[in-house]
Image (tube, rainbow, N blue to C red):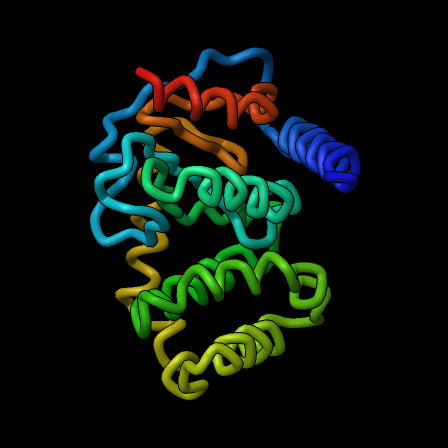
Length: 219
């Protein structure tokens, strides 16, 4: 119990950083109303999902593996999932911001390559990409990045040659592009963008996400 104040301070600091980064990275102009979308469109088909299909609350995150705010959001979302293992699920959608992140596209393809090869390894790989974001985004060229991303996959038990072949596969590119197309249809322009049961959670409200989840669970 002595560690509770420290835990609260850490959590509050993390939330503040997430909100700050999300606001800075937002490319929208002026205040926007929260969007509402068809849950079926948001979840899509055969997308990475953490949590049970029977969950009462579905969080859908449009994210970019090279986005600093997404990196900060990842453990925050995991805390919410851990708090409600039977009632909340998280759907990951690729939204590489290629105009500002030079390795956004290839890292998204890396995530989908792992998903195609072994769905059970996706979330572990997702965590590695965020945990080592500063490492791989600092590399000098895309070939070096691909090799490094392949090494991460290999460390999770995925054949490196198979990964390097799959990362450039049409099926992988088409899936990433399909997610980007959905984001465009929804008028999204920043990451992370999060929907809770079909309604967008605005960046300035990220700190209230746990409370919003609790409220949705009580409905």
